[in-house]
Length: 104
Image 1 (cartoon, helix red, strand yellow):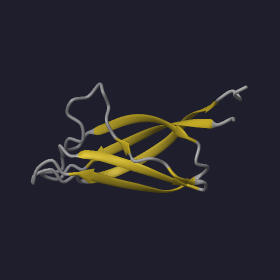
Image 2 (cartoon, helix red, strand yellow):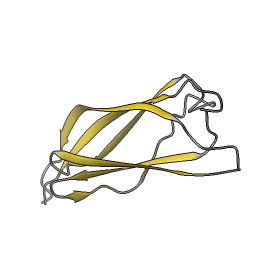
Image 3 (cartoon, helix red, strand yellow):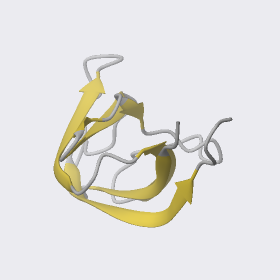
Image 4 (cartoon, helix red, strand yellow):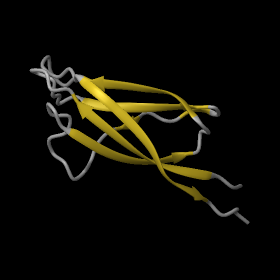
């Protein structure tokens, strides 16, 4: 069976208002023409303080190709009462398509 994978860069810009940063676990789900992706944790192993006020975070994920993306769902799991995220904007870029070889 043959499958294709797509690598995405997800750029998250946290708002600049007071208390905009978050310590919550943030997840995104891609909804494509062929169905949804798994819930993907937005975590950059190089950064310890993600989703801080006025900051840009970039996370990469490789997932099965779902066709053209028609919707995104962003959710967060609050770790404490002071963890809501104030999202300024989010951009998703297709970086590369990977094609797996057929299995024999």
